[in-house]
Amino acid sequence: MSAGDTQFFSKIGLIAATVGSAVGLGNIWRFPAEAQAGGGAAFLVLYILCVLILGIPVMLAEFSLGRAGRTDAIGSFSAVSPKHKKWSCVGGLAVVTAFLIAIFYMVVAGWTLEYLFESLSGGLYSGNTANPSSEVFATKMETYISGGWHPLIFTVVMVLINLAILLGGVTKGIERLSNILMPLLFVILLAFCIVSLTLPKAGEGLVYFFRPDFSRVTPSVILSALGQAFFSLSLGMGILLTYSSYYPPETRLVRTAGTVSFLSILVAVMMGIIIFPAVMSFGLADHGVAGTTLVFSTLPEVFVRLPLTWLWSSLFFLLLTIAALTSTVSIAEVVIRCVQDRLKLSRRAACYWVMVPILVLSSVCSLSMGMFNFLDFLTAEILLPIAAIGVCVFVGWIAPKSLLTNQLTNDGSIRSRIIGLCLFIIRYVAPALIFLVLISPLL
Image (cartoon, rainbow, N blue to C red; front, side, top):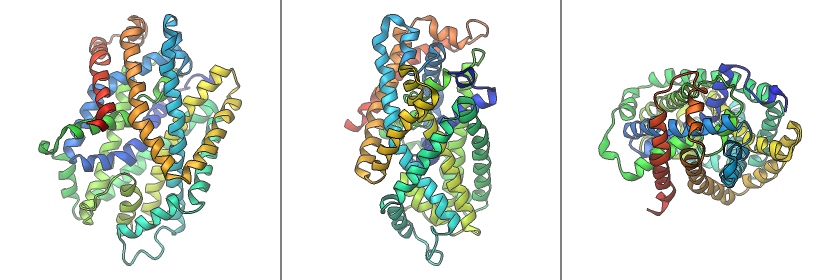
């Protein structure tokens, strides 16, 4: 690999790429539905606490391991602690998890691209402007997601777009993409926030989202907030571990983790400001929105009630496509870096070795919701928590004690007062709480 392929070129590019890997579908697609199910403001407070107290220390563990190892997710473990090469299996699990996630995430990315195309062409709203309803759009969603060859075509297109970006390498591919798309994502979010705040019942939506009712908090809501924090920060996927291997030595990891976490929370808050005033204003609060239904059925019903329907719909699904693209690129990069380093291949060869199987398997997945749901459950509920626990145990107990200190202080050149607290959380708190997330389906 050339130097340009192993290191981010600028601080802005580094932050943009890392934020792009974390601020993806987790915040824009999943957070509003999780917040709605968890009581709005109460869930938001729990989510922020989970990010600050738990997410940042675990993120710093991945950052430290990745930058110290300077290689792929598997090699970083043995590079940091050669006496404990067996722990490389944790990195292997993260790579396998990333590969499986990439398969069905390409399908979701294909859905977002199709909705963007249908919004621009007017097909999404043809015949529905007179009597808009979630049921009508749910039928369209069913047609788009599981009807014929539609999902296959757009899934293939998204895989090819990912391939084109990844062939450009770290600086000319990932960093350049992030430098363009992440500012655009925030501009679109801001525009939607302004529009949402002008809606008739915007105040009611803001009260629901910002005035916590802690009587709604249950153990399951706490676990959901914890899971959302891990999902939205891309912990346990090997992404942060891989991206941090591209960080220059002078990068301040604590500041980077704080910035990424803040922007991740900001995107979640902005999505709440967008969603809940709109839902309240158009009487959709009792529609039982969740996950896919919220984004692909309920929101089109909101857009059809606004002037310039096609514009707002197109902008939103452009936003979702951007989030999907930054997510899929970062997930695929985990596997590509591993294949490149393990098999000693060129960047181009590694890209094809990884993306061709993803193309084939995601195409099959796009035509099988059973496979899609299985991969979603397997990765989110089982593999991700196990990989995250493995990273915490390794950094907290197995790796040299100097690892965290050296990485957070840049080998003593800067001061860090949170090392002791981070180590305590990584050793004791994080593994226990992640284990609860792992076994939560059984409780």
